[in-house]
Length: 228
Image 1 (cartoon, one colour):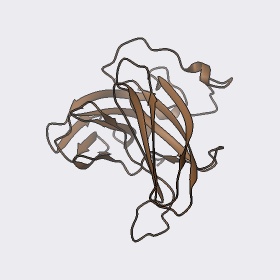
Image 2 (cartoon, helix red, strand yellow):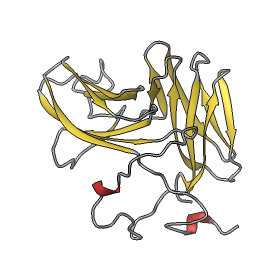
Image 3 (cartoon, one colour):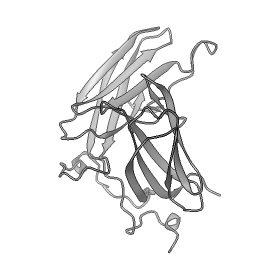
Image 4 (cartoon, one colour):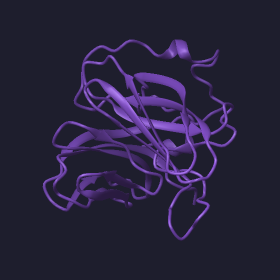
C-alpha cells in the first residue's frame, strides 16, 4: 500500500465531514465569574463536539476546549480561563470560568462530527466555507477508522497496527448520553466521576480511566502524530 502520509489528499481514505457549525460570543465577568451558552443543534442525534475560543474577535490567539491562557496565580489554578463543551440530544453546551481579575468578551466557534453509528442524511455545511472548499495547498487528515466502543473496564483498546503513532481524536459518552470531547492534554473530564483519557501507541488507541463511563467514540487517522 502506498504510504498515505505522502499525500495531502488520498481518495483511498475518507475525509472528516463537519455536520454542524456555530459561532458566537458571550460576556464573562472578572475573577471567579462564569458564563454558559446553550446552542440548539437541531440534529436527530447527539453529535461529537469540538470548540475553539478566544478573547479576541479575530481569533489571533485561540484555545481549544479544555485549554486556556496562563493563570495569574500559578499556585492555585491550572488555567486563567477554562472553557469546556459537551453535547446532548438537543444542545451544544459550553461553559467558561474566569480566574483572572479582568472581564472579557469570549468568542467561540463550534464544529461537530457525526458518531460512527449514525447513518441519517444531514444538511450540507459547505456553504459556510470560502471559495476553496477543498484546497490542495493544505493537508487533509485521512480517516483510517472510526467507531464506538463500550468502556467495560479501566483499559479498553482499539487496534490500528500502523507501525507509528497516528493522529487520533476521542470523546466520552456517559450513561445519560452526554458526549464530552478531549482536553488539550488528551484527558477527558467528566464531572461526576473524575478524569479519563486516551493515548495512541504504534499499534493501538487505548482508553483508560474510570469504567463507569458508557462509551468511547474515536477517530484514527493515517497521518502521523509527528514527523520523524
